Amino acid sequence: MDKCDKIGIFDSGIGGATVLKEILKILPKEEFIYYSDSKNNPYGNKSREEIIQISKNIVEYFIEEKCKIIIIACNTASAIAVETLRKEYPQMTFIAIEPAYKMIHDYVPQETTLVMATKGTIQSEKFNNLYNKYNNYKTYLLPCVGLADIIEQGRIKDINSYLEENLKQYKGKIKNVVLGCTHYPLIKKQIKDVLGEVKFFDGAHSLAIHLKKVLEQNNLLNEGSGEIQFIDSSKNKEKEKRFFEYLSYCLE
Image (cartoon, rainbow, N blue to C red; front, side, top):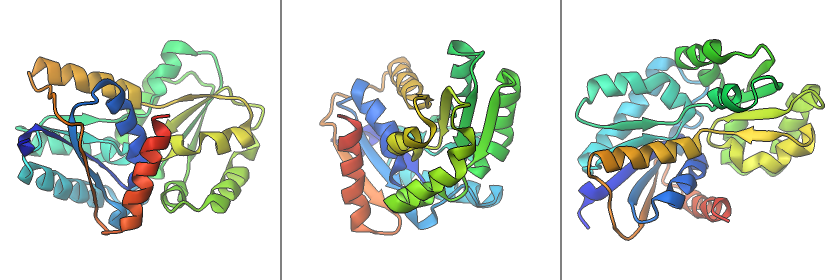
């Protein structure tokens, strides 16, 4: 199959498996190049200029591979870099993940909500525009500095300690949790262990629906093999193993 039939998708690491799994549910025959940028992980504590340059480098790679569309699975890169990418690469279509805060407004506007995201996402203009537009004044914003990194590394004990320390103040206060980083859906159980029974919201399913619509509108749907090519910028073979384990877990 010619490479121009492939969809490029990138994240700061392997957490984007949570986005890809939603896409595969409705587009199982599309072919993907997944770029795990673990060499530069985490994005959340980098400057705007750094994140834009990192994103441009990955986009250049996808363009060389003649990808037909690019998905930004990282909330931080989406919040900070997508508008610049769309201006500098007008020939390319970008689909960008967003924190699912609008879903709170649409479905549970009167309930207390915790937004968990990276510092970069929470401080971004894009997120703040979204937040200010739909703020229900019953929302807590929590910049989870370093959490994506320890999830990326699979440090289970550190994840549990981090959540206990940073979430305990919200126990019993929260009905909904917006997962504003693609790594966070991988630890829903651990979050519930601290907060109790909560409902989760993330932007992956909406992104998948939007992607299918864009492909249909542009006559770009592919009846291919469903192949997923995995690339990790740190060339860590263990990342590939864990990525496909996560993907299998997500698809259960």
